[in-house]
Image: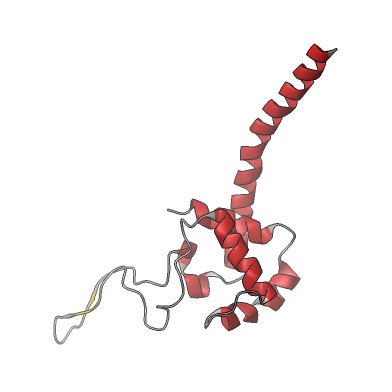
Length: 137
């Protein structure tokens, strides 16, 4: 009897270990979709890598660089790069900003999309976004 119960528990643990990565991958895919749908990229850049220039640009008259690849675009210096951050940290920050618990100079911008989040996002979408961003290198 105890032997059968241990076998059942072991089967459940193995099944859970096999299903969890699939669920995580689906969540990451959903997170990427929601990151774009909720316009997160408008301030945090493609894939959460920040609003940066993609290539060097020289001034045609002076020959000097106007900006360099990777340099933050003016006006977006305060918006954080989210890619590669810890998933749990990102999730807590989003929840705290949307609930009003966290308030800084950029919180009004995030609060501005709260209506879109409330009307578009489903249960678990903020966690999916956090999972997605944590996987971006």
